[in-house]
Amino acid sequence: MAGNKISKVKVVLFNDIIDDRGNLISLESNKNIPFDIKRVYYLFATKNGAERGFHAHIELKQMAVCVSGSCTIDVESIHGKASHKLDTPAKGLVMEGIVWREIRNFSDDCVLIVIADALYSEDDYIRNHDEFEEALYTNFPHYTDYTQ
Image (tube, rainbow, N blue to C red; front, side, top):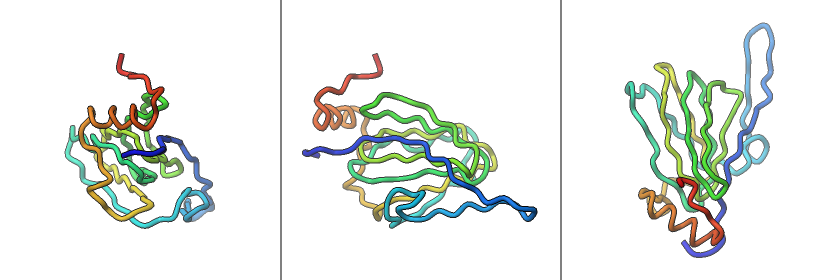
């Protein structure tokens, strides 16, 4: 994990095309998705009270979009902690690099799509919060433990 990794979280609002037939949002690589798209997966039929995530990535760039229903994504990065409610398909959450994420509060009708810039690689995961904090200290020497 040596080197200068990124740690970035950003909310992106999409322009939707609305007419008497309904709404349409187009997602395009390197336009409103700020990277090349290599992988897409989605979470649905999530059990009541289930929580997902509880990991960070080293280099992966992802955007999460709740295309139906809602959920909450809590993130922790070099910039601190934040909670983001995704409750419209017109909003996405970009997570790049070393960002811890926990996903909860799934509505019954939630469909969460995650768009990524790389194929699945277990080597890119940090699945232990202590190792996540160590990665932040290593890559960002001025990191402050935001849990205090």
